[in-house]
Length: 215
Image (cartoon, rainbow, N blue to C red; front, side, top):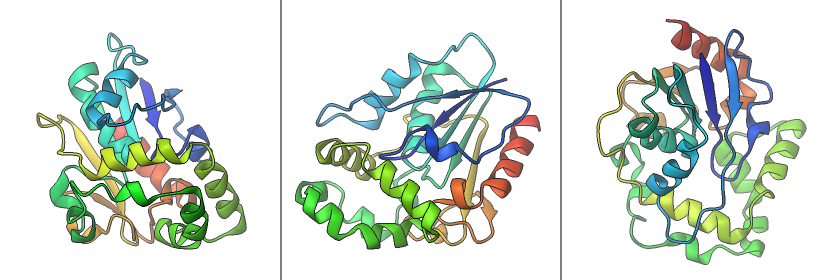
């Protein structure tokens, strides 16, 4: 089966560098530039153009990629949708995020603030080892501050998919500080998993993912 991997906010295919998904044809989807004010639904339409919906396929998205995968499902009709370290609707967002909806918190973001808050961002993501810190910093430098603002605004104000997603599976870490598991419903839990667990817990995530794809 074709498996399309969708990275999270500000990331690219290197996020999946340690993930093993044997027995399937893997496709890495890269973020096209999001125009200011665009939504995750807008973004899903652009990414869906890279998917061959005539073939059996699965969509696998991490964080923002998981939200976009749910939007894409109505367009490409996948066999399965797997979201990792993500949300299924605004009700799963912590109150600290929900109160920011409609307030445009991303407007205060600058390159200086981004650098000053880097230690906090690493902590929220669960990035600890020197190797993981280097990867995280490289990924964060991929996009301009303006691109990140657009992505953050789209995530914070996401309303969830317009229609229920069929064959939806959710993997979530019980140590996720950015998207706390307390608000998450119906997910398969990865013990010790943080928001960066697709890297730090790649073996466990891969095992669960393979079981879902082959089940």
